[in-house]
Image 1 (cartoon, rainbow, N blue to C red):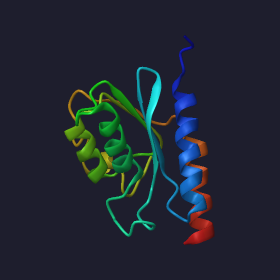
Image 2 (tube, rainbow, N blue to C red; image 1 turned 30 degrees about the vertical axis):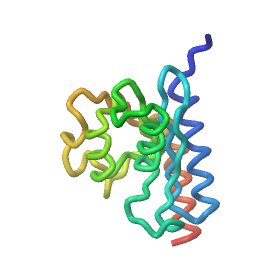
Image 3 (tube, rainbow, N blue to C red; image 1 turned 120 degrees about the vertical axis):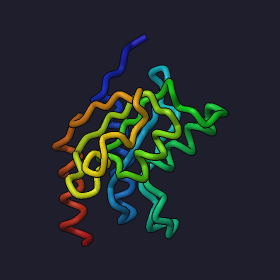
Length: 146
């Protein structure tokens, strides 16, 4: 079996971010991986659903829990193109996700600016994977649509 790396899964999250971009949603994409297999794909849907909680991470958590048949994601990794906000970090804490890998940091709204303790104490974090690609898509979105 070929071992897929963080860049591979972040590219999959970026594909989701491009779907959001095409819908004029803030282009954040996420995938959740268990045993080297993507079990959930999601992107921001706050505009489409008129729901401020419809962030990519929240959509992915719900989808992954459904696939697994349980609310805990303790053997899973979330790949997300932008650092999670405090709301999403709190949800990831409750889900007990094993690992979070994100691309671009969010200097204004990222969870680490609010508190590094929002995630579960056992959650491992890998920041900055394909950060330039992830940040570039955000910059393009805000220059074009906002």
